[in-house]
Length: 97
Image (cartoon, rainbow, N blue to C red):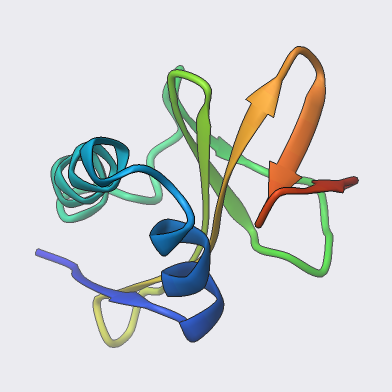
C-alpha cells in the first residue's frame, strides 16, 4: 500500500477547482494511486522526461502528475490540472510538457 502526499503546489492546484471536483479528485487519487501507481494502464502513463513529474494519471479531463518513491512506498502528487482539447492547464495557466 502506497502513502499519498500532496506537494504545496498540488494543493494550490486542487483548491482552484470546484468543491465537487476536489472531492472527485481526492477520491480517485486514493483509489488509483494507493495500490499500484507504477503499473502502466490506459489511465496511468509514464511520461517522457520533463521537469513536472514522471507519471500522469488521467481522470476524464483532469490530469494528476506524480512521482513514485518505491523504497518508501510513497506517491508524491506534484501537480493537478485539466485538459481542454489538446491544451493542458495548471492553475489556470496554459502549460507545455
